Every structure is written in structure tokens, then in C-alpha cells.
Image (spheres, rainbow, N blue to C red):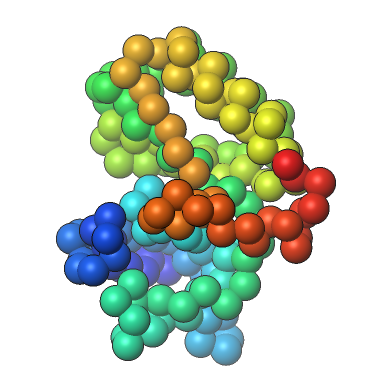
Length: 161
């Protein structure tokens, strides 16, 4: 396991505003398989294979997708990570074949196979949002920055929706 330091772009994808360190597995062909989903690097999830691209502002180029969704939860307070609604959500995600990857202080990042289905995933995360005041969530690799679906799952899992 290695760590890769990737740029985090602003919402307009015009400049680097921060960096995020992700755990990766180096592949023999110069690529990297993500071992966790990012909180801030848009468009990728655990299992995806990327390669570094110094010519791209994002610093990377996606080679292949693993069929996983990155789901990010924002919490009103870091102490909420131990709250009952979070414990329930972690169990719900596990029942879908997903995992909690961790996350920064007031965030949690999950990786969930797209084959679990969007309806089931959204139901679990919407329940969290209703149960924990101030919590919010979003997909990290389903929509582009203009809220248009990326559609990659239609090739890998047509029954996901």
C-alpha cells in the first residue's frame, strides 16, 4: 500500500484549492488502484484504476472503473460519528456490500457497489439525513460538477437504477 497526494479542484474545476491523500496500490503498468474512496477528489471511487497525468489540472486520468459508488456524508459535528443514526447507516451500508472508508473530521466516506441499487442506497442515506439534524450526503462519482449524471454505471450495471 502506498499513498498518493491528489489535487482537489474548486467547484468550477478551474483551480487547485487543496490536496487529498489516498491509499492506493501501485500497478506494474504505472497505474494506481484506489483502496479507498475520496472525500474531495471528484469522479472516482475505491477500486478504480487511475494514472497520474501532470498535464491535467486534476493530476489524474481515469483508466477503468470498479463499479463502486463513493458516498460522502457531512456531519454537523465530529462527535456525531458515534451517533446511533451513523451506527445504523454503517450497518445498512455493510448489508449492501459496502464499507466505511473513513473520512476527515466532520465527514464519512463510504464505498458501495453500484449493484446495490441507487434506490436502496438513497433510502439509507436519506434516512440518516432525516434522523441526524444538520447531516447531508452526496455521491462523489455519480454526477459531474454541473449535476449531470456521468452514466458510467449503465454499462457496468444496467439494473442499478
